[in-house]
Image (cartoon, rainbow, N blue to C red):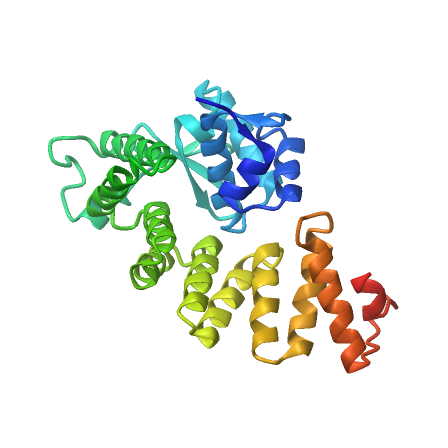
Length: 303
């Protein structure tokens, strides 16, 4: 399979270049300009974990500890990482493993959400089912790459949600498929399902905001973007879209804060120049001269 270039990765994952560079500096992904499909999957996991408010440093420590404990070369690909407080646990051997404390706890999540025995699941042990769900998810992600196999990917995601209704990532990907078809009503339903499955999943609220914007339900879209930012205040794209939404509501002062914050968080990104230009326009039209607590004016912050 042809490798993905940096621009392809940023487009597919919808992450700023600065975020990718941060993961590379932390050693979570190799420093390269071309990425394999497995690396793309790994980056997708990093994006989703970052959206749950886990710091890059915490992810790095947990991944390094899991390598040491399990002997895995790449725990993010070979196991299922889940947020556990401020760090990661990994689903392995039918248990949740905290590699930093080396403590294990039975993984109760699968049985209650499927509504079956905690000992056997359709003839399979819970950890075996979890492994198969993970394999199904990765296969569906691969199938998304071609329009010819997209319907098959959609079917697999739907099967995953039948087996594991709380699989937020599958719900998000199904929502994105519907979004690309411009079936915004179904996309909204899947995105909302993801927010219910994981109420601290910032990406789900961001995507929900996007589809609500398409449905011309701007107050609800703003609420969804605000929720994403409440979970992850450094979510640059949410600041950008929120600024656009406030401008459409003729609330330039509110938009100004998000334009300047976006420009600060992603100063070299493709939309940074536009954000700074919009901030300057607002400052010029409103003749604002707001001094920050650091003694800099908003004019200086926008430049």
